[in-house]
Length: 417
Image (cartoon, rainbow, N blue to C red):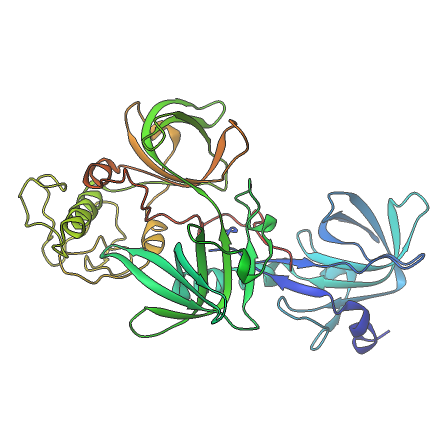
């Protein structure tokens, strides 16, 4: 059986994206057509290969033995393909652990094995290459922020996007081919995001989109959007529990303690002191209508640190060689501008751990909504924000953080299409 004959039954083989993950991190998922009588089409990841027997972990979490016969056809297709156009035949020896496969064949009576008639393969190396390209594209063409308005008639979403120069309004334009996804209520995994519609997006939601921006960065034609209702927490640390990987925070808005859990997907950064002081100075300036940072050394929210670093200087912890004027990894300078998405800058700061926190430290957190009085899961957490909280009358509730982790591990944050 050649690739063209396999094309029709395999049309459901799709590539979907993460922001894991994370920006979301892309990962391949294949939607499986409903079984037809004795035929079966499980989808999953190769776990091990022993002779002609391939052990796979299905997307449903089951372990399945795939028996490769002499008549079995193995076809390799590229991530992103929606059919088998350009697919090539491969041998069993070309299959490796970590590859994604869709199997067509006849299952055993106990459903623990399947005699494969055909196996469609997406190579792990190809997927990783695609993931890297998609992750870079989310960083380059992505923008995130808080939804302020949704116009269903025009298909336009307005967000308040934070940059080091301050918040700015960005109009996100959708079209018929814009992919819209929405996060689950208590999940930080892009894998749990579901296809959604524009009317599910509400003011107050966090949203991230990627697409083509106008030169001013005030409009974006969205290729893809992911949104969700998340909880913004600004407060001070009461205690930490390294064994449980949790911290307890006093929420400055509710004045109540909140237990926050960190997972391997949580993004935790400690803001360099100079960067925090510069941001605090700018927030104070915006609040007072001065449209800029106070003069250096004026004792404002930025303390004694200069709100106007000299050319060539950079905040501690910034990327080596970064420009202070809002260039990649830079802390920003005293001029307006430097409109880089703060999430892009945040991703360049080295990760922090619970051991870096002490009682009384100020933190800003984007977390899942959680259920009841149970703990919430941190998506993005930032410490070292004491000057920022002191400079904002809202206790940090006008967040500049967004929940999208552009640097999540390849452990599998993705969304099913």
